[in-house]
Amino acid sequence: MTASTSSYPPKISASLKFGLKNLKLSEHCREVIHEYSVMLRPVINNVFKAMALSLNLEENCFLNQFGERGVMFARFNYYPRCPRPDLVLGLKPHADGSAITVVLPDREVEGLQFQRDGQWFSVPTIPNALLINVGDQVEVSPVLAFFEIQRMLPRDICTFYTNSTSCEERPQQFEIAGLNLVCVVMQIMSNGIFNSPMHRAVTNAERDRISLAVFCTSEEENEIGPADGLINEERQDCTRKSGIIPMTYFEYYQLGKRPIDAVKI
Ligand SMILES: O=C(O)CCC(=O)C(=O)O
Ligand SMILES: [Fe+2]
Image (cartoon, rainbow, N blue to C red; front, side):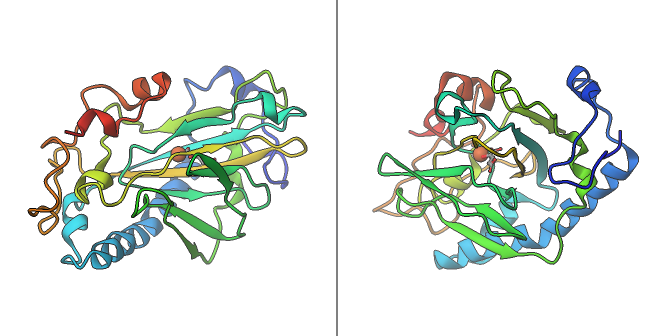
């Protein structure tokens, strides 16, 4: 599997369309993804620390729950251009099930939108920036932090995108090392203070759009609970003890439900 062009997104072999289930990552792509995940770790650590400090908590309290071996899984999204974006679902409204999600949005094409007060707002493109979706503090506005990074992913990582331009075909997503049970960790660890915002992705009439979302979830065996200092007389524990949801994230997704609702008391 090789990138056949230096354009962004690159054109790829049509054979990918038939073999997504059996998709084997080339050695080089594995290395790139690994390198990217290693580079993300200090970014993630800093975000967790900043979130804790913003609540006047001990700076490692979220990080400790996330664990040394927190899990990351990557989703490559490809949204083919469509002459009637109004008729096409890009990525339907959802809240991520991760603790935090690091999104590498398309450099040039907008498409990601967040909901506030029932209205959708587009996230502007900022070249060479990562978007960290850490939920919103007052239940209405997403807190997005943009981190300039020195370099973007090498382009051939994009060989995993399908190359359909048909708007009948739903945008493709596939995961690497996906999880079946996902917990809405951040909302739980912060006892409902940071809420994961609803967001969606829309398609573009003229241009294809791509993005890479890396979902960071806590170590699988960790039991998640509100951080010390966040439960008091005014604010009781508002989630069930274990953050694990008894149904898979994607079953909720299909039903258009929010997984967090399953663990709220
Ligand atoms: O395509 C995007 O910019 C966002 C993708 C996203 O929200 C997701 O994969 O969960
Ligand atoms: Fe998302």
